[in-house]
Length: 566
Image 1 (cartoon, rainbow, N blue to C red):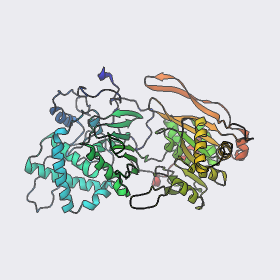
Image 2 (cartoon, rainbow, N blue to C red):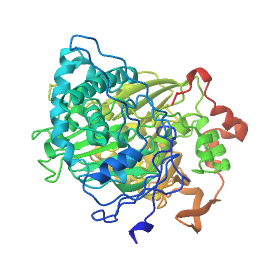
Image 3 (spheres, rainbow, N blue to C red):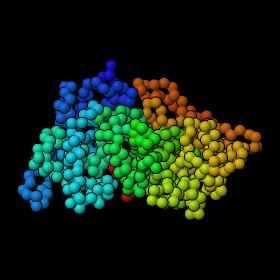
């Protein structure tokens, strides 16, 4: 039965970018279930009873908004156009969980819950009014001198709140004079216009919820969101048409000096918070455009944090802290969305604060310990304005002239792998990177292919020798079927003794599944082998005292003055 579909609450408050392993999957219908013809979903709100709404094409929208966590404001009183804008009237107490900083709360807002539990076309009856009001409000903002501040407001919560208040008052004035809409539709209209001007349009309510880690737009009428590692279809989030979706994509790219069109149909970018975006033009995606946004982790992750969410155990964390601290080079291996960046951040927390680190990325995602000595470098694609391309490989080469103790590359996916491995093998021990692969053995073959791209004519045996000399550890991470992300294994890379020898990673720890508990996978870590005498001698590990769990706790501490605020 459709009513038995698992549901996931999205109103909860968790730190932005936090891994969500272990959070129960309840309160949202999962992807793959049919949407057309579903009965209206129950939307529980603190202090209000949940109920089922009748299948009327219009009334369910109004009633749904009235019980959703929104706050309505009585219309403001306007004396004359020349009089300055009046203050916003007092609002009723908010019944929803506290929103992320900068979210609009003056006259109600659309929420992720409303969109996830909604129906396709639930706001179609308001689209003409939204477009008309949008044009009028934009003209008013230009007259009041806010035009140049709108782009800046998307990344400035205080300025955003100021402009939201102005928009709120403008619309209340307009709707009072013209009787454009009434009741709950007025709150939807206000929120929609604000989302169009300052936010991401119809998907802004999804991105404003910190528990949603990824939004995938497969054309104007098909939107998915990742919640707790699971894909969810969002029927209530729809764009008017392909042109509307393309307009939102251009708005994301414009501050970066980038644009997507027929001559440049593929483009990457990022939001003001650093979240990574990818856009595909409908020229090569006939059902598009396609827009994918992955949330930027806004938290300093440490090994202690990952142990607490069961992404690895204490013994593994202690050994990783010991090995990384004492200059063992590592490659984090995993697929898309497996948590490679979070693990790389956590490993970096073990590095001595006196070391100089160069981080190199396509888009700035890494968040190393706040007190670390870090040089952040970002690649740059060729632009329509004529700016020259700066590749990961260019940055790796240049970083070696900046006197780093270690180099951390967010991901190698081309010939930059050769430069990265060379750096690891020529005075930059303890450097780290990530690579896309399904496991340790696959990572060896993947690196062979990437290194070969960076040096024509290099033989397979020479590549294996280079990998063996440069890399000490493969740390494999995986996103499992229950949505959890964890380290699936730690492997030592042996030093080859002959050219003909095969390079086979040695497992140190591996996760073994023993069963299931509901939808949750049950298992434990099994120690396969001890760290070899060869690696101990190579990195002089026996000269240092073994790291303890108390040491890991100390490495994970962030001074109060440097902590990130939610």
